[in-house]
Image (cartoon, rainbow, N blue to C red; front, side, top):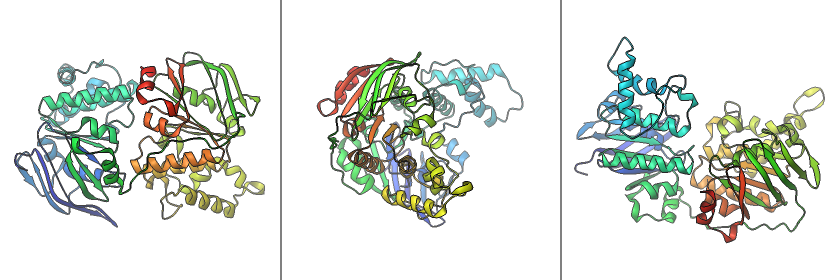
Length: 494
């Protein structure tokens, strides 16, 4: 397309045993917000690395602002206006905001001595470009995820930036923070800066994008104007599958609660929270980041024990003051951050599956019963359809959706009565999200009591029969999921 700021033509890339990109072509204009979408493993990351000069394509052509390349180096990409903001933002946590903002300029100019007055001037100019208000002397590790992201954006704009590539930029952000990010992207658009917005979240693609390109198995399967794309088409292009709309309805008839929560509280975090959970029911707890929803989840698993109130399991008072106590009472917990809290990534898939019940798989004198272990691993790999050629492979070799299935398998192997899930599908793609929801609903139909803690309102409404809305540490609404809407829930949240 004539006048394109970025143009990729017939780019092909293979690694050992993997054909990552197959004749991929797409283009972007100045000031365009272009969504690059696709499931995990679709080729998005490889394409980003080729545009930014990290990888060389096997064949094909790249054009930046009228200059053509068969391959780019990272410095060539930067010099022609390409900046990438990865999921970890590439900030130095032990340095100040000022030092993070100015360090690249200092290095690029090969300065041998630090001039803090010059660094402060660079930093002040950087944050002023997007109206970012932050203490330049604050250490970055003490800042929120959203603030770290704004530092990365401000730093990118120090250079003659024409295209900013944002890799899954909303994964760890709240709704309010996402809104701030989108306002920043629109601000960049007004200044003529293009944004390549890499995501697999359908609602974000529709809200922020002018155009879209969808990859599946390394190939472009759809591209066009975002305004002409429907939700059904987006999901189908992403996955090659059609998804039926569904809303969970409990099938277990028991009215006897498996869990009763009576007026529990924790100082300065939440207070007077009460609810009950029946076998076969999925209860949703939602609210903004500081609403107390996540702290309630941690308290139910004993990570942050309650200071007041009572917990009853099957009518019996229990004290849940540690994860061990929670597990003794047949409670499992799926954390929001599976990478640091839910999995042993360097260890095998098999070791992760049996991690929570290793004691029951040992024989006398502490020796592991390998046959029992193998049967247990095979059972859960099969039942949860964990996509792996070999359970002996390290857990980090799996996609996000399959890693989340391993976390589920780890807890289901313990034969639970209650499973608390904090953000059960954070960072997984559309197909895996749909499949995980199906697994949770089937578990409920088998009699497990589930609690989903999430600010993903479609997820809550599709999978829960009841929804508790929290604000400021208190429950402000107890709603029938089948008779409420996202708008009504948001009115209580806000």
